[in-house]
Image (cartoon, rainbow, N blue to C red; front, side, top):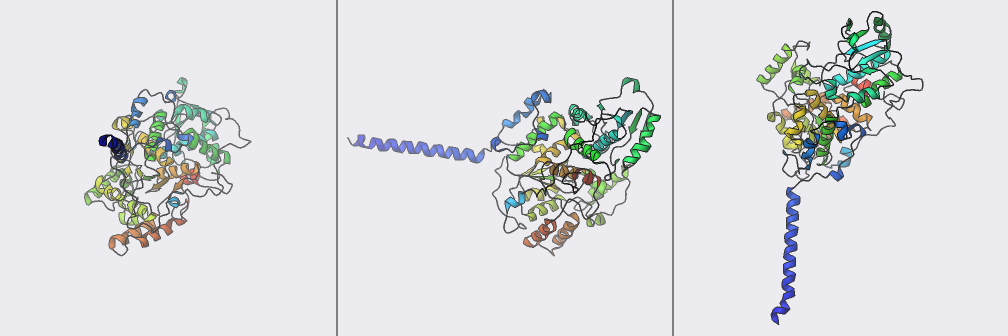
Length: 510
């Protein structure tokens, strides 16, 4: 009888033990397994929607993207560190304010043609275009050439991408951009063909170095008159060929349509870019940092702060041996004091910390190989451990189709940068301006452009010991950037800013 009375108690104990074990197992897995929360992913803009399998036309895509079923990127197995403040962060962290996009001020994109805009006139000849520079320099040049083709009544032949620059990229237009989309979007603006007709393949062509920053009169008069002698005009370079101001509104809108609608990346690049965005988004709101600290940038700009004498000498040799880089002798100290050098990774780390972003902020590095490797990046990683890039967000097999093609790899960084919650460029080059403009076009997404000239003065004081990291430095940096607008250091807008990113006073872009 005694044993029968205790039987319910024994059963209750067994049930409790099983429940406790189950709870322990669930807790263990929740700590050690990081599952991508796809249900919480932000919707990507229409510009970067994942193409269908039919659109992609890339047979290996399904296998390549199967890595999304894994639990976490291979290079980040540790659980993100807990939220805490670092030296230099503001006393009160207003996280929502740190991520909040700027006010639109009633400015909206304006790319639709006006009521008097007509279909393209009868073509008078063919315009061949040889682009030059990196991805974003070529993008800007192509948009200019679309407008030029419209002005001179030319049929535009699909542009030839630069294969001779520093990066030695063999990519063709269709490897980087969606060629069919480009042609179809511009059908009511400019006639675009993939190549010259056979009967003109060997015809005499005028090779013209179009004058920089030229207005519509130059093209309507001097260039259009060349059709009287030639059927084919070849533009030897595409960058900075069209004036920034005093162009008809419909020509400016056409440049915007070409940039933000027609120049869509190739389907496999779009797909991979969206995948990288989703993987970054799994860590929460993130910063895309365009860390312009690659060898070519430092060699071109002559900036050597924080480098060894051997590294500085290597960069000087590269600059001396690059024929089309006209300036050979550069004073790196003066260059940095004038704010003309990209911030170093350490300086970027100090800047982001001073703004108030906590140490568990996910940061995507949009860049090529950082000069100096781990030695340069260590300070940034020590402050912000969730430091990611396409190389450790994607598997080797996934990136293999893009490897060795600088423009295609840069396109992946471009997509992630445009879709990030905050974009911070360490240098105001072509990529920074293009992304800043695209983000503003898509809805005034937050971009923080460091005032390098003011920052290096503060950072030098920190190095000398006359200023310490903490609230004082943070307050000064925040105040410097509180009302910082799109124009940098009081200068007149450059072509990318004026053509793609700045506002006029008529409540629209351009």
